[in-house]
Image 1 (cartoon, rainbow, N blue to C red):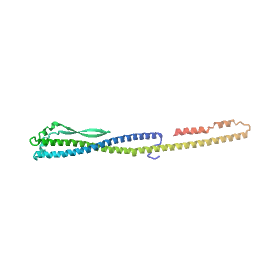
Image 2: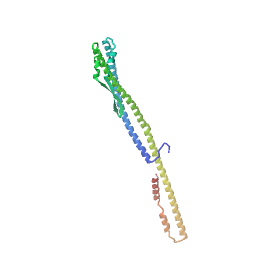
Image 3: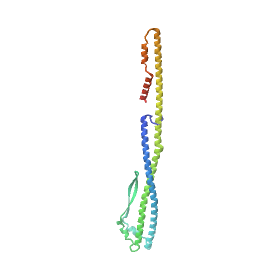
Image 4: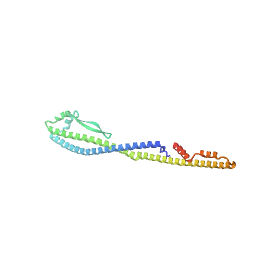
Length: 265
């Protein structure tokens, strides 16, 4: 028996068959999980392409709006005034978990507090305030699109890593673990068949030897009876017949040998 192979018996065979059933079930579930992740992955990819186009348009509109605001304020730098009035952020972002086929995916959600926008609404009222307000709204839309893009990109990379890991597990089960278990089961089955053939051959040899021994005993009894009859004419042959009848039949010998074989095996 090879060192890497277990003992060849029925108990070990049942154990490895149970392992194979568990591995096959796990392989099926992991494939279903991988397919579900790939479906969501394709949807995310489509959404990312669409939101990237939206972000590009929003940033381009924001650049034009910023140029208009600079022109409306006669080229004055409004950045210092904006930074001075920005005490607290009116737009915040929180992280929430999402679940896809048992995989936790981070989702960014944007919260906008309109009350904190009051200081910015009175910016440059006398000199291009409406244009600056339009610029702020344009950039606000761009920020919302950027947050959405960041959420999709994070989910995209998370799903990509999870799909790779799940695919490695599926391939390991399909091409390594399950074939190894099948190889062990095949080896145990072959060994048990070989043991059965060896035991059958052993039983045949035992029965043949016992038959030969019984035949020799019958021949010896008949020889002794013939010598006794020759030495003592008129002697009865009943004791010899009784001894011969007491010898077991060949069928009984085969049954006993088969019974011993079943107990040993």
